[in-house]
Length: 103
Image (tube, rainbow, N blue to C red; front, side, top):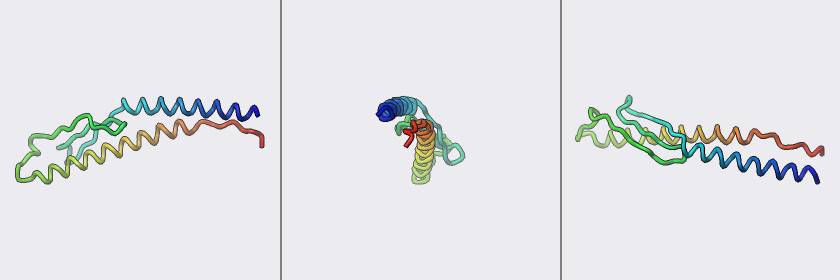
């Protein structure tokens, strides 16, 4: 039965570490860009967009569709980067060794 107690403690520790990792990710931001830097997006790793910057030279009223595509591409890149940060954080939490119950 001692191994069940160890397992419960380990699970509680892992849960605390996951909560800490999620809190850190909520404060971590990434910057992504598209169109050679014409569009830049800053996103938080909790999935929220902090800012979008568009180079004024990239704006042409005849090419609004292209600009919208650039914004979408930068946003997707930002989300991908956040996903990578989340996966890395969860991998660190998941690397905690569980106790061997001897069986």
